[in-house]
Length: 444
Image (cartoon, rainbow, N blue to C red; front, side, top):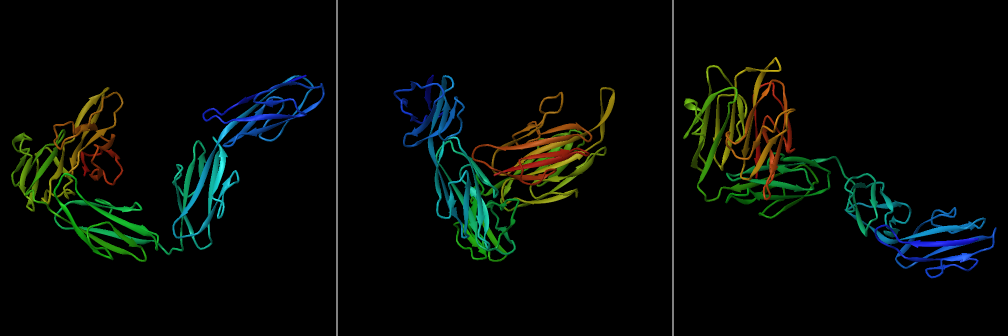
């Protein structure tokens, strides 16, 4: 009976090796076919080359990666597949202690933090902190959570396990911005984007670094830290041994003037917005809706709805609520939105619907766009990239409709949050239009 051996490599990274038989006769590489006595038993052994491993047997009743035993009751063809080996390395970070173990076995780190696996192997890592410590998170190898880490060994990989020492209850870190300039404070680890999110709780004993950046497109400056343990103008690193408060001061640059822009959303309702140099909507026109003033000037805006309309409210530029007046301090360019409503009806498929207006404004020193979801049977109706109402920045929807807005910053700018009908830092926001509303997206 004839026994034939075929040697192949891996699908992507080809491993190499040879196959030998007991009794002798096959040494494949070179001699891959041999005739054996009918009824005899032949044992095949794979000999991988350095840097390779046996991925598995097939044929002749053989499988797995051990020895292949073939009963020669008939002629057989057996395939041995070799693959390359890759290395998984685990490192430990942080002030705490613990061990990391792998499945399949090989890593017990502790002491054994490196293991070689056949390419394509899925390896599960699990962290076990010491009794008084805490496992924080994984990094590297595509793992980021604090659960199990599963990596597929397509290449050499390094995964870090972060342990922290004993911690008390979480302590709050609060950032307060002062001065007349504009800027943003961010934290590492994440949690603070101030801007809009100026307080976050961190594990007691953890280290947090704050970084202050003046607004892009201005000549404002960051002039220094104040409060708990911070000073100077470089990054501020704090140990959260207790609740802490830090101030960040930004100063106005030398440009001298700032522009106030009013966005009046009026597809259903109408009215006017007036203030120093602003007469927007007066006489039915939207032509006098921006004004350049000396930095530091306070401008009081007044909303006056037409007799058949209602003033819905303000958004952006530190204005909010439904009071008829709003005062804006022009420390830099500001955009303020105002919405008017007038219930009106349209007939679609023999049904009457009350229309509501959704208006969008762009604020901040950065550049971006705001688009709306496509309603069934229509084309996208909001595609706003300028802080003017004429630039596809408003649309009338049927009463109760839900519109989803998406804010997208251009390269070099960052979306820093919503105001008005939308709030928070998520770039996507859904608005239910039970009344006319306005949303302002800020880019820095």
